[in-house]
Every structure is written in C-alpha cells, then in structure tokens.
Amino acid sequence: METASAFTPEPHDGSPAAHDSAPAPAHATRERLAAVRRYEILDAPTDGTFDEIAQIAADVFETPIATVTIVDADRVWFAACQGLEGVTQIGTEPGLCASAVLSDDLYVVRDAAVDPRTLDHPLVRGELGLRFYAAAPIITDDGHRLGTVNVIDQQPRKITPMQESVLSQLAKVVARHLDLRLATLRAVRAEQELRADAERRAAAAAELAERLRQSVSAHHGGERPETCELGGARQRCPQQAELKIVDGWGNAAWGCLSHAEESLFASGTFIANPEQAGLAAYLNRKGY
Ligand SMILES: [Zn+2]
Image (cartoon, rainbow, N blue to C red):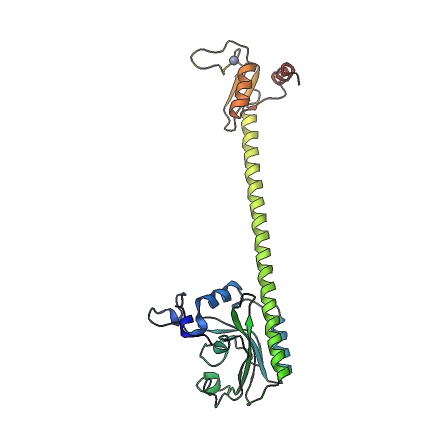
C-alpha cells in the first residue's frame, strides 16, 4: 500500500479531490493520473483485444463477470466488460479497482460481505451483490498502475495458484498492448507532422516561384533605354543598356554589363529576359 506521504494534490479541475484542503484519494496521485492520460485510452474505442482478455479471465475463473478497467481520478472506466452489459464505468469507492491499483500484488477479496475493505462498497451492498473479486494491476514499463484485469462473482470463492498466475499474465498482456497502442499513436502523429511540414515547405516554394515568375513576366519585353540605368541617380552611366535585371519584389532596371554584373552578384537580382541578346553578350564576354 502507498503511504500518506505519497499522496499529492489532485491537479485536475472538476474532480471531487480538487478542493484545496482535501488530500487526493490514494489512487489519484498526480504521477499515476499523468500516466493514465499519457496512454489516451480513457473513453477511446477499443479493438476487441481487451474483450478477449476479459473473456479468458472469466473462462479461467469460471466467473460470470470479468472486466478490464482503467482507474481515473473520479471513475473506474471499463475498457472491457464481460457479464455486465451496458456498464461503462463505476465510481472510485475504495475496496475494489481503486484499491487494487495501489499495489503491484494481486488483490483478492474472497467474500466481500464480510471483508472490511469492501463491506460498504455499492457493488457489494447494492443490486449486484458482489461477493468475490480478484484483480491484477496493469503495470506500465515505468511502473505506473493504470487499472486492473479482474474477475467478479456473486458467490464467495477461493483462488488457485494457476488462476493467480493467469490473471497476472493477462494484466501484462494488457500493459504490453497499451504500450504498443501508444507507440502506434505517436508514430502516426510524427508521420502526420512530417507530411504537414513538407506540404508547408512545398507551398512556400511554389509561392516564391510564382512571385518570381510574375515579376519576370511583368517586365518582360519592356522598352530598352539607350543607356545604363544602374550607374546612380546623380550622374547616369553612359554605357549602353544591355541586360535587364529584376529582383524578387518585381523591381526591374536595364544596365550596362558591368553594372548589371555588380547587381547580380551583390544584391540577389535575376536576369529578366534571358532570351534576349543581352544575356548572350554577357555570357560571351565572360567566356562561358
Ligand atoms: Zn552602367
């Protein structure tokens, strides 16, 4: 059993334990609830595996009821439930699952009507008339107990070593299945993020290419001035205008070869009309 020093305040709003003054119930430690949420199993549709495990447990114990449960802050949620049709969750009154997740050991109540741990439990006092309960905790790789695989009967019972062993093994199968399920969830999400990132990059590249294409075509075939426009505003360069250049924002100008070349290398501009004679002259002069 965990000691009182292991209790931590319940961090989640809306649960009965959220009041400042009241300590959290023993099953509602912050660490255990964080582990429960990490597996994202609560209220999730299940794939039938847990139903099969509950069925095996019921067969081995020959009990009318067997369930696979996850213990939340203020409810015990049924991942599978054989023999209790229509029940999806119960409360966290101490004595059954909420107590079974406090220890790594098997939790067995042979006769709930006389066992002080379960005398007052609603499933014992109420219509169901629970008398026998045996549960194995579902323990994650890092040691958190998420819930139980358990069997229930309305008659008092004894439990054999073979049955104890099977119940523990079934709880381990559930834990392994939950780990595989979590790994799959994470892999799918990582793949989705990679794909979304690639799509964002492709869209940005396409947008840039389109902007360049538009700026180039906007200046395609414009009037060619007699002389270079790149020499400076105060004193114009007298050289013949031979190359039209354009930048990524669509600003364009004609320049002589030396000023155009300076601009190409210095400020990330582009040759705007490569099929015109200016480029051929430029390349010829550079000896390409
Ligand atoms: Zn010039």
